[in-house]
Length: 113
Image (tube, helix red, strand yellow):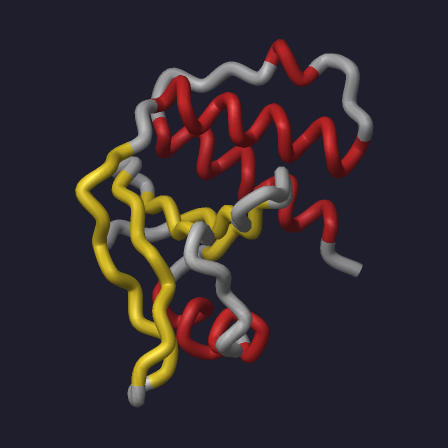
């Protein structure tokens, strides 16, 4: 698992930026057992993980599927459109997943109260 990561809820365009493992472990919303089977954590390498409840809390089970940069750009565009009704989301450009995570980090800072 390479942080940062994004939490993607099944059937929803919302993405949650997770900066590091410490944030993942300490955030009570992220550690509550409310995940659906299709929810995914996507790390900076594009690897997918399924959050599952265990005796230790929420564990991340690595899946064989992997997202490409293009897959993630599509998710970020859908997220931006949903959050802000942004009309220029087709212009979101990144040459790496790392750059895309930086964009999502900036957006998450903007959304904080």
